[in-house]
Length: 412
Ligand code: F6P
Image 1 (cartoon, rainbow, N blue to C red):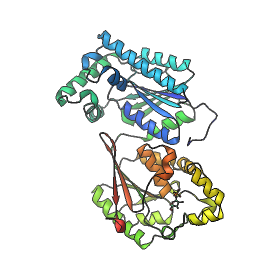
Image 2 (cartoon, rainbow, N blue to C red; image 1 turned 90 degrees about the horizontal axis):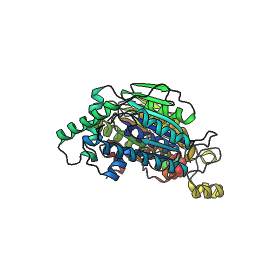
Image 3 (spheres, rainbow, N blue to C red; image 1 turned 180 degrees about the horizontal axis):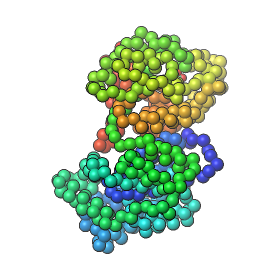
Image 4 (spheres, rainbow, N blue to C red; image 1 turned 30 degrees about the vertical axis):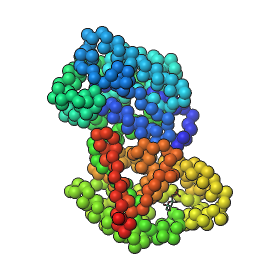
């Protein structure tokens, strides 16, 4: 667990509410990534996926029509099954279960709440309301038409069918009312957020996350600083200058970034340490330095080589080898600590609508990379993040795409 144990029970169900193509699954997925990275056991139960797995993917709009009794019963049974699985999973120790379904009628929401209440699980509804036709249209084109329901179907035919499906839901929709708490309503993909009795540590974090995240696509570039004099000497930490190879990398990075993102101005973040600030210096854009991005603090081992640590502090060396994720240098930090410290930067990066370049340090880039790639926190300390390599992450239709660019003196 990367988060501190707190007194409140962390078991929480997030119940998504909203018409199809309102970005619910996108939000559910983003929340899963964020909460999972923070160390909460989080899982999404998507009723659409249950439908496709159990009843097949090729349902046309008439399956969703209000007067189709068979379709309605099938959909209700699937929704119940998914909720049952969520409950079983929470009984087995799950912490945040995200129930991703339309839940657009009051009767459905009341049933969901009753079952969760009976199991003693707190509920927060997250309702996505979209009035802007441009956002809905973009959602339909980006997700639904490319999704499994319309695989191999002519795009015009798929669009017409999906619009008819939407109309069936629109005919039955009952927006959430004031007596349905706790609830967060996200209007027009985050242009407005309404809150109805949302209290507590974790719901507060979720709310803050939702106010910062958005669905606009922009690349994220992660890089360590150029090689430093301490890297050359094999010493950890300190606040060294760049080596000559490191200076070359800084120039190569500026050339690469200009070519890679064209005319757009990216947001650039560095740590407050010299080696990252110097690496950013040749870039034609301003950079903001954040202490939250400083390297993992090695405490009493700062400035030593790994061999010196092994000789002078053999117990510490062995303890770190045994559990690198939890091990905290005396007077310093562990990877687990670093996740807590870097967390505000996740929100800061999520908030940006322009390309983002983060120039930081080995441990910090590992932790950020684990967030974006959704890797278990415990794997952070071992992720390969070489010097003089830019990791480029882009949101593709099938998920996050990654390219690694080796630059400067080490490039092929
Ligand atoms: O060696 C470079 C460095 O950034 C050190 O300053 C830091 O202590 C270390 O990497 C983190 O890597 P690891 O956790 O693998 O020791």
